[in-house]
Amino acid sequence: MVLGEQREAVRLFNNPGAQECADVIMSAASKRRAVIVLGVCEVSYRGRTSSELAKGERLVIVKEDGSLLVHRTWGYKPVNYMPPGAMVYAKSDSGSVVISAKRGSESMRVVFYKVYLAATLNFRDGSSFEQKGTEAQMRDAVTLSPELVEKGLRVLTHEFQVKSGFVDLMALDSRGRLVAIEFKANPAKTADVNQLIAYVSRLRALSKERVIRGVLAAPGINKAARKLLADSGLEFKRLDKDECLHVLEEFKPTMNLLSFIEGEDEHTT
Amino acid sequence: MVLGEQREAVRLFNNPGAQECADVIMSAASKRRAVIVLGVCEVSYRGRTSSELAKGERLVIVKEDGSLLVHRTWGYKPVNYMPPGAMVYAKSDSGSVVISAKRGSESMRVVFYKVYLAATLNFRDGSSFEQKGTEAQMRDAVTLSPELVEKGLRVLTHEFQVKSGFVDLMALDSRGRLVAIEFKANPAKTADVNQLIAYVSRLRALSKERVIRGVLAAPGINKAARKLLADSGLEFKRLDKDECLHVLEEFKPTMNLLSFIEGEDEHTT
DNA sequence: CAATGTATTTCGGAA
DNA sequence: TTCCGAAGTACATTG
Image: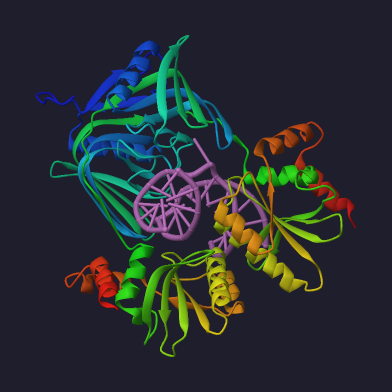
């Protein structure tokens, strides 16, 4: 493909026969290389559910980690797939290419009646994927600047475990009341309120004499969720993702969060 | 690609120049056809979060609905993507191919420094995707055969709305107590118990004199969830997916569920 | 290893 | 259109 180079990043097989195509897939699998196959196929899956997909033209990707994706020409999600870790086999069977994938009790079978194109990928891709603006970062920002939620707030701990799960952040307000804070990076929904309800009721069961506040901190909240929250005696605090990122940027030069928290724990005796 | 046929399912562009590649993508977009591009690219995304992905060899799929996927050679999920509905543009810029996608406040930019292969797909795929063994089907099976959960159970309604959400199935047990049933197609977790807790506490608030039972019906349950369930005075009922499917198969010849339920509603005055 | 919760969740259905 | 919850969720993280 790329003449003059040692490594061939892409090797094409145009209109391969069934046997050739099966060989290409098996050979790629043995070398831990990804393969893409374009053609007419049908797919069946047995495992967590069962599914059947009748004949049609699709793109199939067999990845080097054993994951297998069947993509149509529309939609974000693959119409059928196997998660990473599957054992993938391919064979020729009466003019068709049969790709089978097994992973525990799950199995998938793709039958290609016609293959337009197969390509093996010998790709290099060591780059890391950097992402900003997640829920964890909102929590970190509030840990660094509790006033993002309210003035006088003091952070006690994060990921505090109760039976129903983990409270994102536990804090004390200016009047000494415990505050359980649940962060959401997206507009809060009823399910998120349920989560907070469960946490707060657990906390109240743990300590009946203390006043426990529950705060849902998110960039927004829908109407039903807001109503449920109010009815449950809990609070909403709008928290902007950009503000949080801004705070993190400010603190970044000084220290990183991990060492900050670890250090504090060590100094607190 | 397929000689002698009118339609060309796959059109290949081997080592295309930047301008040619951009043209191929724009032309495919205008005809609502999918394109795949193999090559060296970097990706940035701004929107719900921000992300940067440095240079590496990847497979990019531009689909006919405007979705755009950047796949590495491993992993089920695309490393970067735009959901369906994006406006996709491509242009050549100083030897590189720049693909931009916009959708509301989200935007993505893929820069290809080298394209090994581009292919436009003129695919036919009208087949429907059939799936069996979902949570909704478990609920339907129990509606048809309430004894799957327990003897003497009578189904009242499904998707009963309370403030916290929708109760999968409401029923009366043999002693006239209300039973709220939550189905899970997968082994039940703490989060599922929290959901049931929220529903049952809502129902109890609605009718203080009635006894309300809460049942979590799933093929299994993990330990923590089972403990939380017991502590909350709720019940677990193991429900096998295959049994449910069996019931559905049995009833299938007689009537379909929809007409069954609709009909019952009409006759109930 | 199991369990827990996020996700640029996506997707479909119902109000 | 908005809202809601399931998903063959996948995935990272932590006990």
